[in-house]
Length: 175
Image (cartoon, rainbow, N blue to C red; front, side):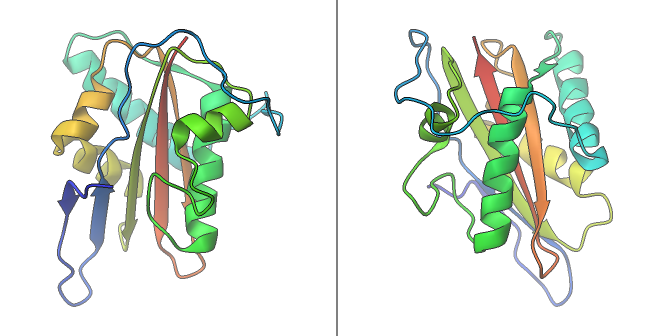
């Protein structure tokens, strides 16, 4: 994974870190593996996830792009990865099991034509959603995911580790 933006920690200043996108490309509708879990259809958005999603869509609106629709499937996928990073204290598009966003999507039975992921982690911010979206927009590859017209749906997962570190995962889908 290529780190595209990192802010050096100075004393007790908050730190935000980004990792580059996995990438996405138009593909035939795929679901590479049989699902090993079911996607919850009633994934309730937290206030932080809602704020980040609205801020992301505001960036799309400014760019003259259609707003992305919240996807419960993408939410389950994003939240699963954010919670995994928080619980296992790692920060990467690749999970400890070696899966990336497309593999995780396959395990949940999510079908897609294009898929992308942004992740962010930080500690010490009063409004982590605003910081995550602002930092994504300062990174060309993350901004490219947010402003990519191929995607029509998205969701953001959010988790907080026991030490207060915040993790975000945003999943983009095209069906």
